[in-house]
Image (cartoon, rainbow, N blue to C red; front, top):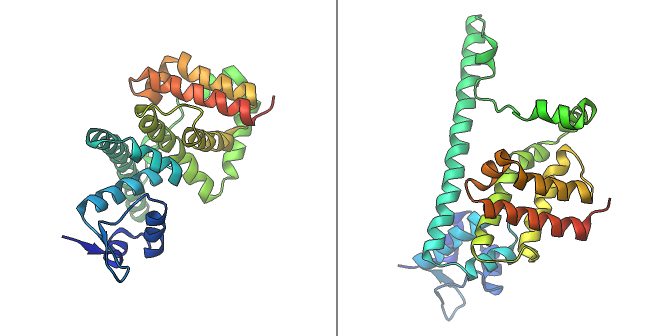
Length: 250
């Protein structure tokens, strides 16, 4: 069975113009092109488009997407999709918990009741490292970080919420393919990592390299970031070092 470019555009939410661009750069070649120039797509192309959209959602550039897909086989596709699904499920559960908390608050306010603090803030994520951060870097630095957060735009808040997971997912896919940390696709993800980090504080070259080393040295960070894969955390550190040396100053 084949679908026209208009049908694929309507189903996927990707414009026909974008699909034609994907074709022109070799990222998504239609199953066939009719003599009148109309493009048609089959299941293989639909699945490839799904992969493209997932990788784009992780923040990868088109060049990086093309590189990942060029090195990917069926098993790798399943692994990447599984990791992405796990992140989506966790995010779904987190948001569902927040919805329940807000619903309970609305219901309680309508009834004129009171809620205990643990119920008011149920489902909200808390920073378990704040006390340690205050001890390590001082109250002034931590308070300055919170002040920066208060000035976030909606776009900043969204980047802070989703940026790091996008970086980690993207790096895992590239590392699995043996892509060097100096590669542009890796460095574009590290650029996103630096941008997210800079929403909280702006690290110098030495500080950013130190942050990468802390990820490796601190077991808590190593476990959270690598989810059991220490080599992924080391890959992140090495990529951060390359980025810092090329782009940052002390």
